[in-house]
Amino acid sequence: MNAQTADQLIRMTYVSKATFTLISGQKEGYNRNIINILTTSRRQNRKNKLVGALYFGNNYFFQCLEGTQQHIDALYAKLEKDERHTELKVLSLEPIEKFAFSSWEMKYAAIDQEVPSFLKSYGLDKFDPYHFTPEMTAELISILQKASEGLADHQLKN
Ligand SMILES: Cc1cc2nc3c(=O)[nH]c(=O)nc-3n(C[C@H](O)[C@H](O)[C@H](O)COP(=O)(O)O)c2cc1C
Image (tube, rainbow, N blue to C red):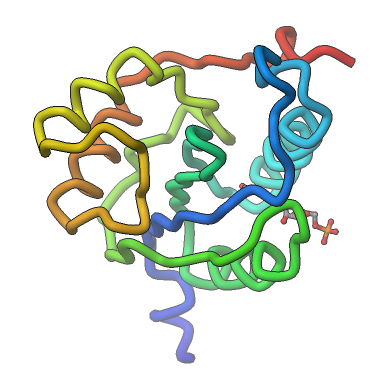
């Protein structure tokens, strides 16, 4: 990898399956795994100049990450070994000119309201991002960008 490639800004979106489940009715902000993932992500991403957003629905993670190729590759290697999720699948990988998530070390996107109508517009009723088309992935990324923050640091219960 030459220096120019390593410094290229990249947006990577992947999906995975959580290996844990939320207790019925449990809010994400009270789930120890979610709290720990967000706390670590926000601390480390600030250090590694990574930004992005995370959505958790139907026990799947959908995460969009932006940063240099080098930092994204290093994080992906860690993500692959993380036992809190499995079956990682990269849905999109594209060079970008500038950050779309520049304000968020890791936004926990509050899009539970938007997701049902998004799915409905494609004739689907279950959130299963493994079967997303490139068009659906791009649309969900754009929904993530517009979303509000669902779990700010002060909402994470310790
Ligand atoms: C769904 C999911 C998303 C994650 N997102 C990030 C992230 O954006 N940044 C990050 O540093 N770690 C993230 N992690 C945690 C990493 O897998 C890893 O545990 C963490 O970076 C600590 O690495 P270290 O042990 O080398 O310090 C995520 C983990 C999961 C399960």
